[in-house]
Image 1: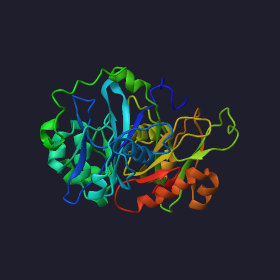
Image 2 (image 1 turned 135 degrees about the vertical axis):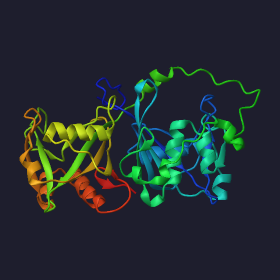
Image 3 (image 1 turned 90 degrees about the vertical axis):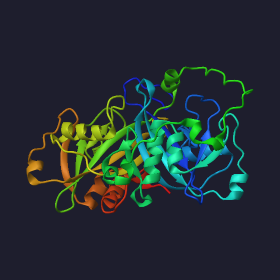
Length: 366
């Protein structure tokens, strides 16, 4: 299925990226959407397009198109797996932007069709001005210590290590829209209402380009060896090549979150009922030369495994051929280049505090 096609088997999902621009007073930039009278306040950003090599590139492109300048992005603030109207799943990245100088703000040249104005709001006003789901996402980023990021959210609520941050679990803000952002103003009385969109919301979402997601788990034994599984050969150019990977598989995006997928895949592949631990990495695999759909790989910490667990492994014959515990050097020989880079990155991420590593083809994106 190409990136421009609609998804028919429930695995495709939308992707988007936004940016939080702070100022020197602890406020963030919000914008007014001239085409949206129901939820007119947002943060800069927008939807992934097939020409974008990663969500970070989506964020950069959207800011150029909306505000007329190329920002400098800092770290990833959070990733959120949400479900839009009509059951459309979407993964939303939110980045920290470098603080804007007065000169940069004065030089903004917004696209009038995309941005009807901007304002700086403190955390509480931003929470009241933004629509509920986006409000929870942004407030989580603003309330949490920066060192704790990136935050893991599902349905805009804390997941994984983010649940351990008491600051993030604050009350939801009452939704006031433009009333909480007087600096944005309102559409002028003489301003005609925006023309109706050519497609209704659900049809628009259904025709947007899709990515896919996979959920995998890192298991190691007491000696630090990594548990790998080998896929059953399939028809295709690599069908006769032994293909090793971390346990896991595709996320059924229309019915489960990545954590739920990791839990299900481990149960189906290994016969274990375990709860995924910390989210270690988000690895974006871009479009390949054949134009196939990009894949976002979530990798969770499965934790240490015991001899009893290993003795209890029951592989599904229709999917897997064998499993093996591998020292890093052997894993590097068995895995493809990007898969080894991802595995090396998650082993390192397991040893440090904070949220998941942001990877591109297995390597940290800067």
